[in-house]
Image (cartoon, rainbow, N blue to C red; front, side, top):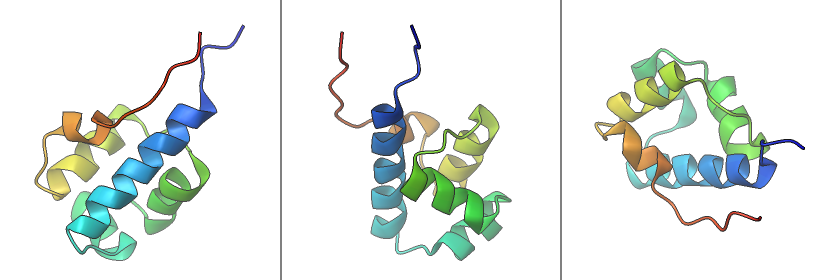
Length: 79
């Protein structure tokens, strides 16, 4: 049994995109501010790729948000 949930990863990416666009930041600008490649941000937002904790923190701090804000979204876990 796998504990990974691709639907959660996609929901995380959607939340990241929502927060980024609310701040009116392009992937390129956010990437430059966080030291993360824009392609990596695309993969997280559009393809549901899981970021490392270091990447999550870098993105949050670049957006002047607490890292937990990136994890603050509704999601129904399946049993």
